[in-house]
Length: 332
Ligand code: CMP
Picture: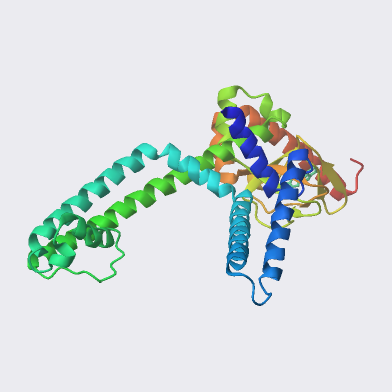
């Protein structure tokens, strides 16, 4: 069963990805082209006058089937470019218990509202409120705050129930939105944590830290991917973050010379330590991955992880001395 499932999945993936050159990919593409050919032939033949009715119907059926298959393929293809769909599925799965309890509240209000309005409005509007199932349409439209206005209560009791249902509708929708928004934020935080964890292992000054300290810093770092020749920090601009290089290389353009920093290096610390503008412009020389640490987090971890901040301060001191010597024109 699992094997069939994975084969179906692989085959679907093969159909959707045009650049899949595996035998199953080719087979599915041939089928795809065959369907396309059949569709085109059917369209061409259907333009001939005085075709037999049965034949004309067959051609129409072929055109409809082929068009249906292509529409489905296009919609499925969109899913290849929508990683948010997987996130949404995960969020719904993670929050299913909370969502289910809100749904139960929703159903309870819905049935109570339909029953109450049936009692108040049933006699006056038998078509719309004559039975609880009939009154459910008004209850759904009101509780979801859609309010088509095709069915409205006429009695005072019915209107009062309507008002309560509308307010409940807003509350239920607000609850649903809150649950989903929090779920999305949580899921994104977990993904970012994994992305950072992956990159942190490439920076030796982090791997030397213990697991507990490391997990604390991982939650404060952000991964940023840059293409080649992109300016990351500009001289004289205020600095609000520092960067650790987990892959690639950057060029530090100082007033007199330039220095290259590779994987494991860091920059942007001097503006945070000295609270001065950036003293160099830094650009990537190749596709580069950086771990960003914002100033507020840098100051926050200074007391928790003194060894890391000391190492950063030590290197900053060395750079300051090197820059001062270069300014004076003395050999470094
Ligand atoms: P900051 O001043 O925040 O921004 C520019 C950065 O360039 C600076 O922090 C340092 O991280 C880096 N930098 C400055 N001087 C040198 C140097 N001599 N060698 C390597 N990096 C440097």
